Image (cartoon, rainbow, N blue to C red; front, side):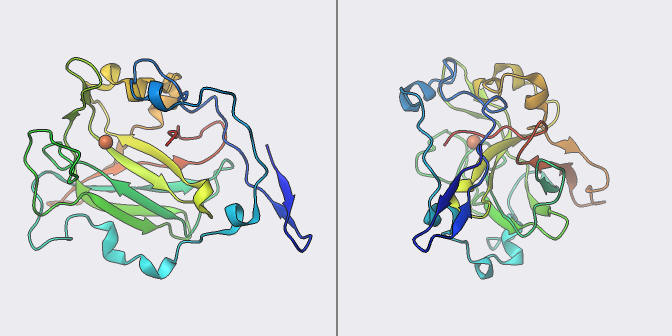
Length: 244
Ligand SMILES: [Fe+2]
């Protein structure tokens, strides 16, 4: 749904398109326990977009440095684990590139532990790995990260609950209100059928679009395996996004 609104000077401001709610997981998914406590209990009220919501705050591009996209060079030593390249295109609903857009990632280390005080999973922290990176898409909508393949980790949702290895992705868009968040998985993970977060995306075809593809062209001899992950923000081929 498009929304028009006017600012104080009477200039028409075109709102952004709303999400297609059929592709994305529901707000309340019984098997994903914490959704029961945070989902809206009443029907959503769609408010008109406001000037500040549509036009700002705008992320300062000068703050993003080229080395921010390499998660293996943020500390004096190299992190432990399997070095990988993750790259793809950010596309709109018509398959056109989304240029100059901020993409952020965060992830567990190779042992399946986040460098975060809430994560007390008894796996080792890696002093050479923080697990956060960012970059801007180029003129073809491409992004590229160098990182470590994350480990699976237990998460306490139910008995013997383990998350498949994944990397969290945020696509910022032109304003904070347009930010989209999803998770990228690795092909062939045996934990897929047992993961309520992945299974909360109901259509198998939609789930496939959250799984990266092993890619020889991104694989660098003697150095790193490559995985391709394209992100589509709208339309029938949209990547499923989470409710934050
Ligand atoms: Fe995670």
